[in-house]
Image (cartoon, rainbow, N blue to C red; front, side, top):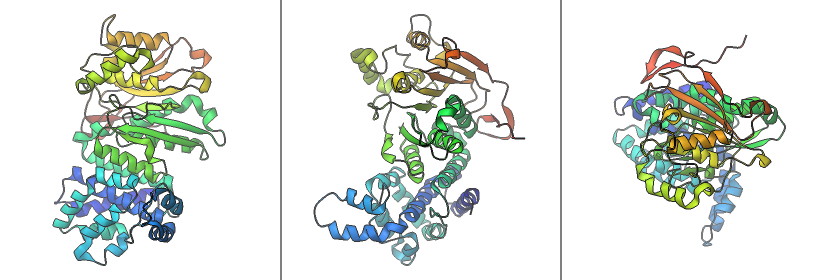
Length: 438
């Protein structure tokens, strides 16, 4: 079964929810069940070995994670004797048993289900007499790695995320960047480094401080995979919304990434990757959102650390935190002697135009230009996002510009390139299409 037909089958399971769930809530059931089945299939070859190891060591009073992950040959494990198929043998205790099954996962996998509030969904499915039907459907879908690779499974999961986000387009913009924008921004970020990324055994890092459901991290992985199957892109991210965080972490787990690199919390007030630098960075921070809740922490950092912290160049007005995310990314750039870094970030017009001379915004722009970090700004068409029709811009930054670009900023007007969609998705009425190959 191809990844597209697998995604279509899983999507069709959502028909069982019709009437009992709002369409915008289908993903709260289908995505964690997809993850559960995939993890079960991945662990199947080593399942018995893990159980033997667990039984041998469980009463020794020592941490078991090192032993059990070694036996599972994965970054996660499960010590339950249940599977989705065997759960069906005891319908009257199905809910209790599936909760027990999930509780027996290692913490890094179990946390994802907890952030989904999956037990609440199980309770509701049970009350609605849907739980057995859903478990039965997923028990019979083949998501084994020999049938569908990590890369293909990632595409399946991403397709499901996209469909569910578009189905709930009234809120999708908070957590989900449209696929065409993601693809363009990713291409702009990587395009100058094709010669490096096609080398054998190359390893690079990608970071998104506003990771959402992981669209940029997935797209970056896919882009590099298309160029060089042997290249390794290690992904990092942080996300504030618990459900989006769960989806992102699940997507990375499915792809075989180290989910310890995906952090939960507010990037501006609690940078959980404070000691890290990255080769590539992508971000679509919230447009025009105030930062009053984190004002004290941010101002304290700016005052106490200055240029040794993230916000030395200046602080924008409290009504719009976009430039704070840009400064955060700049602070994560590798030194040029270590290879340097590139950034792709989507912003509205405010960071370009707000604030007169001497203002925080103006000082931040001055810092970026005087340090020759800005490579290009692309003006996008309006009506490209699910929840806003405003003008947006892609900024590309680099601290290792090609010699012919040094001291220059390229301005690209792509505002007329959007094609009208046959059916709008919320405020998204236009899309960008990749040129077809001859």
